[in-house]
Amino acid sequence: MKAWLLAGTVLLATLFSACGGTQAETSGDKREEQQGMEQQAFTVDTPIEQVMEDPAFGNYGRLLFPVNQGHYSGDTLGELQLTYYSHIDPEKTVEIANYLKDRALAGQTVFYDIYTPEEKAQDPAKENTGLFFFKGEPGAKFAICNAGGAFAYVGAMHDSFPHALELSKRGYNAFALIYRPGAQTACEDLARAISFVFAHADELEVDTDCYSLWGGSAGARMAAWLGTFGTALFGGDDLPQPGAVVMQYTGLRECSKNDPPTYACVGDQDGIANWRTMQARLNAMAALGIPTEFHHYPGLGHGFGLGAGTAAEGWLDDAVAFWERQMQ
Image 1 (cartoon, rainbow, N blue to C red):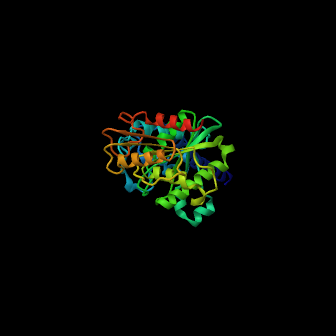
Image 2 (cartoon, rainbow, N blue to C red):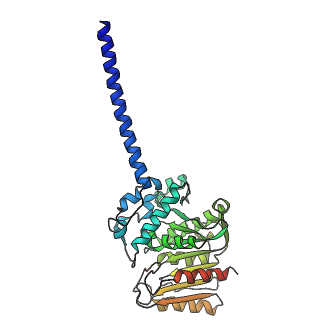
Image 3 (tube, rainbow, N blue to C red):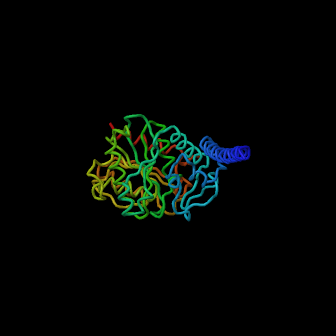
């Protein structure tokens, strides 16, 4: 009897040990799989969905790409296409994704919420907002880049992330805003974003003097409107006007003596934003004594982004130089 009980005890112990071992092995396999994902660099062949779900990005990976999938196509980073945009550079897309992932894995904050959980609960659309941070030199001035998308979506991967990354390489602290659709709500989100940066300037290690607002297409209108009318009008804190506004391909016509110094560029084949409209606005601003700089590039249509490999290549350096002149 004692021998039978002893044998049963040994058998049960063996079974429990085997089960426990299987669970431990399964858990270990999952950890190894997750660690493998974290260590694996993105390539042009990486599925977009895999990037969005990468553990390094927590719950904000989905905001790297348009929330509404109807505004982009392609399964991989190399295949990404965005509505209204041209000259999307797959290598730049990969560089941006890896830059953000590497910084996140290094323990650096690359994304900031601009609304509180309570505010998001009251307006669920605010869940799809925030600031991606491309850190420059500590204490350097900052810029906020605003992608376009006809106020229907945010084309950040081509129209603001590349700009923010390049500005950070030049030492400036750059943010890329993910905002809600609609002109009014987009401007409210930009006002909130500017207010956030000012309120957390010490933590972010940024200089708020002579900051700049950048934008393409609809994002350029946001930058211009906030630059002219101020943050308080859109629900933000009452803050200084930007030192410069940098605009790409938008047909904004209105101007006033309150407009900040403005740089603008566009392609002469743009069927959405006519280059003559942009030039006329800047000429009117210059007549009011406002510093301006305007460029139009032959053969280019709408949404060329950084313009790598086109007649517009290098425009960002011109824009930075314009901004720097306003600092003097």
